[in-house]
Image (tube, rainbow, N blue to C red; front, side):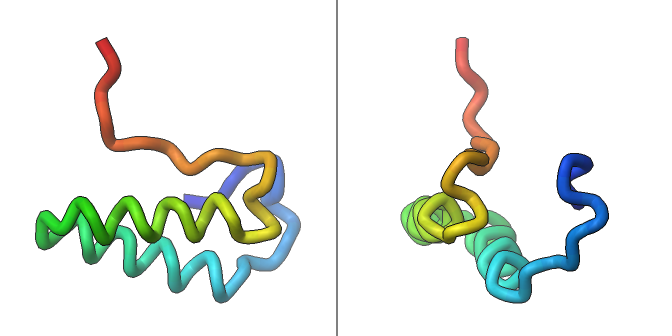
Length: 59
């Protein structure tokens, strides 16, 4: 899903690849690998001020 704040910017192939790998890790239930991909997305220069949403439900 595209970020509405950046809708006019081209998508980042690195971000797209990391998001694809994150989804694949979640799909097979590899939560450790999913955390790794979330960290890589957060460290990606374009995401310094935009956290990646968590799948965790806070109570």
